[in-house]
Amino acid sequence: MRFLFKTHYNQDIDHLKHGGDRFWYGLLLVLAAAAPAALGTFYLGELNLVMIYAIAGVGLMLLVGYTGQVSLGHAAFLAIGAYTHSLLLGAGLPFLLSIVAAVLVSALVGAGGGWIALRMTGIYLAIATLAFAMLTEQTISRAEWLTGGFRGLAVPQASLFGMPLTQGWQHYYVTLTLLVVTLLAALNILRSSTGRAMVAIRDSEISAESVGINLAVYKTFAFALSAGITGLAGALFAHRLGYLSPDAFTFLISLQLLLMVVVGGVGSMRGVIYGALFIGFLPQLLAIARDTLPPQIAQAPGLEPGIFGLILVLVILFEPQGIFGRWLKIKSYFQLFPLYRRATHRRQKTYLRTERLR
Image 1 (cartoon, rainbow, N blue to C red):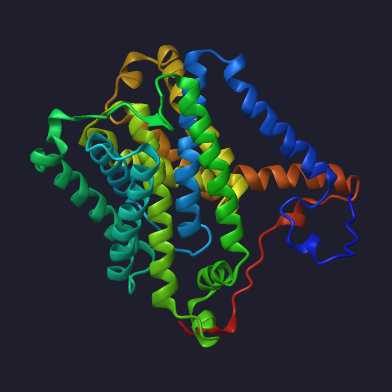
Image 2 (cartoon, helix red, strand yellow):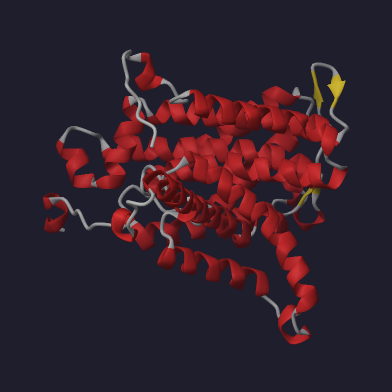
């Protein structure tokens, strides 16, 4: 087991705790930067999609994992970001400015939705966000004068500093840069007073309010922040699709985003990456599995959403901390061997006294 002896305040605010972290994360960054030279077009596109999912997962994790607000409607913010970016790009706005505008529009819509849903919690908030996603999908499909409706909307070709982004590796590096920036920004927000207030609301709204945290302000901010980051992912997702239509932003996308957060590990930014890898490559595994299943099962309608829902239930029942939690347990096993016990990570019920008043 590694023991860290802290001798300076900077060690407390450093994201990388020791030399091992610096080595492995540095190696991961180098491998990610070298991926276009080693991977073919197909796998590079899939990796690009995984990183887009990871950006959207960061936004949803801030809301679900760190503020405790459940959302089943983040496909709506993904769509708002994608359409806003495409429309502004088509109107002649530069690539980076149209992405910033997509983030701001998504954040404003998210702030409005968060303010409306202030008094809702749990299943009621989930249903409200689901209704918002369905309303957004219907609005996009009926506003043909703006979005093209079901005829679709072609995504204009982007250019960055005068260089056309026509190759897959160019989009890959743009997405990788934005993912790193988004992760660092989210980690810094979480260690600020705002992030601590969000975590306090997640743990106990009554306790948070008793110490002076304004629930309305921080809940609305969390919704706006989460929606803005998801809008950023939507802008990148538009270039991945190339052609936008309402069918690309259905309830299944919202379910995939929620599944990514839960499977990766609720309350962990590293879990977002694990969850994005799982969600990104799960359709490929399902496509392979369809070839081996009986036709009655492989061609059954709704098979994919059913499998997503089943995985979600199984993870909640048997591994609530997701892939990241399982990784921590494996690491603890080797660090504590032979003293490791199965009860080491057993979840304890530590309800606060204030929660018993509910």
